[in-house]
Amino acid sequence: MTEKRLYHTVANKLLELIDSGVFPPGSRLPGERDLAKRFGVSRVSIREAGIALQAQGRVEIKVGSGVYVLDRSNLPVYGLPKVGPFELTEARALFEGEAAALAAPMITDEDLARLEHLIDIMTGAVEDEMNPEEADAEFHLTIARATNNHAILFVVDSLWKMREEASQLQAVYETVCHKDKGHREDEHKRILEALMRRDSSAARVAMRAHFSRMIEALLVESEAQALREVQRKSSESRSRYTLSQQIE
Image (tube, rainbow, N blue to C red):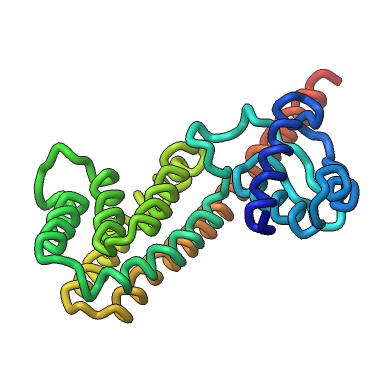
């Protein structure tokens, strides 16, 4: 059996042990050497199995510490890994930038017309059963479909599911998208213009620029949230101090 198939087998066996309670949430898995001896495989297979389980959100690998079992009750409903807004946006920039570049020379006139209509929905130029957020998602998925690559479409669709299913991500994205509505619309238009020219390089640059600006907006919003939290705690402390003075 090849190393590639071995790590799948090892990962499945580890999942059985985790699900049966042998390794409960919060526990640390045995070291690579012990697991390699237990399953009769190389340490490379053990390491790759751990990476696979981490991608599924079942374990967390802490460098220098070990591999720890995560609480399955916190897993998203689609079985996708839990990620933060920055991780997700970076991944989208990488995959969707290349998807736009690949789609550019082969995208159909019908797809281009659909993208233009979706932008009109986003800007409010036309009314449709689809709301602006749904039109935004369909814009990106239409480009992914235009690559004629099912693997790329699966990845882009999965990235959207991560955004839509996590309430924390939804809240952050909604705040950022609402504040930067004008920028978002202009960026989608630039992506469409590059696709209309069948310019792969320009499509990649326009898509990445869209996500780079979003990352900057996320940084600003996260700093604002941190400041609000500090102000809230300061206000609570001041109230407690004032109350204690009144009691004295």
